[in-house]
Picture 1 (tube, each protein chain N blue to C red):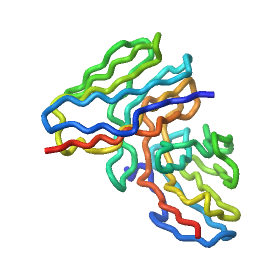
Picture 2 (picture 1 turned 180 degrees about the horizontal axis):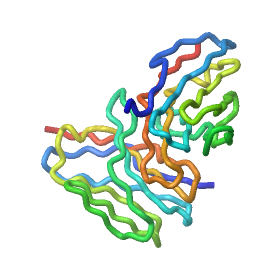
Picture 3 (picture 1 turned 30 degrees about the horizontal axis):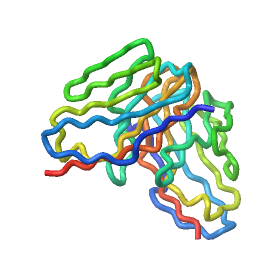
Length: 110
Length: 112
């Protein structure tokens, strides 16, 4: 079956860059996503990348995809305290629902 | 548009009780799904529906039933609640091939 894995915790200082990593096993994944969840809230889509792309940039967010290694990363430039949240990696193949990783808790220290 | 709405926000049940978690969307999305979120385990798919009258099982369907009589509504039923069903439940909707799933705010369920 499909599997998506992430490290559980990342701590950075305000103003530094954050890099959150994710690996997945399903080689037929067509879309890969990054969601953000703030405490007590639902999930908010941050960005996504199609599997035939290597990189996608959206303001402070950069997504890198290494399809050969099935590795996805999210880089947040100039990390702010408001970026503190849990970040979920997810993948989708065809019409199947999303398969989520267990989430990475990002702590931003002032 | 209200987006995806879920009720109730919080619920406490006793073991063996039944209840229905409500989910509705006003975006005319064909695809709706239910996830549960447990600490350290991300979101796991319970059931999903690709359109009215069509439902299918996800990764963890046992103990849950769903129906999809209309495009807008996708209720999740617990027939006999168990402590293992204590979790936060999220409903989501999208167009089938759309890149974005819209999530509801979640229902926090505790089973004693």
